[in-house]
Length: 282
Image (tube, rainbow, N blue to C red; front, side, top):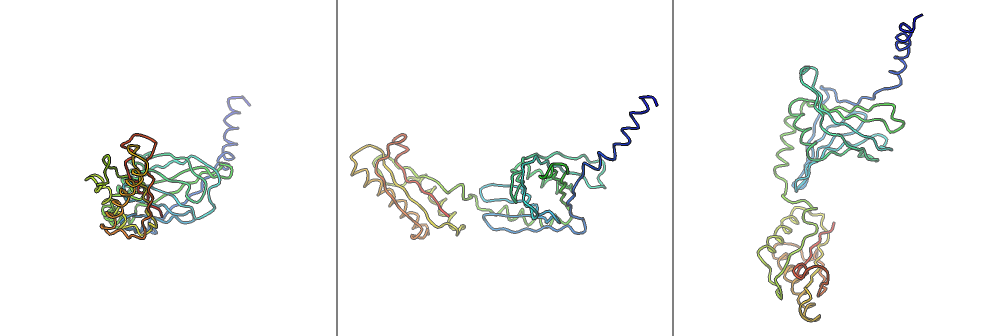
């Protein structure tokens, strides 16, 4: 047999073996079983779809502007890091529409291996609204022989997406990370709250109205190095008292407040030392 004829024969013979070695594990929501759910409050809104035998796709919008898409496992947790790709694939009846590459991310170990940021999450929601199917692909974490293919369905999405969007529109402007550690500043030799300081304290008080998980509010008062040590300690105490009184007047429970005064602080500029630091704890 000539070599030209032999090589095609060899390729044809081994092709089925190569195909058998490289497999795919599909996890998809059938159109007639597609279910979306929405829930939330003024701090966090959630939109999710259950994926049979895999877990859940979860869109989360948080107070302060945070928006993520996570894939949660309800099977064995991820053991190794892999690169995952997220694409929007057209349904069969949109055969002329192209697949859209959305993002790629490195999987983490554990039960929530995939988390996409704001831009990728927004793009995924837009593609779902157009009827596209987001598909997540990555290699298995045993020996990377198989490809995991995880697909979402846009069927029955619209009414639940509207609920999610309404919830998102009503979110508080600040999240915990926005207000957990703030400072208000004072003029030299003064414990009077400025307009800017009052605005910061009102922002904190507003957040405390919607987050019952806060257990302590730590107030640390300081002064700059001007004046003697005893006076600076008294001044830092007066500044803490001013902040404490204002927060209580705004409805913050007094039992949450824990106060300290430290006198002069020797780090940084004098202006940066004339302050009360406010830290929220859960």
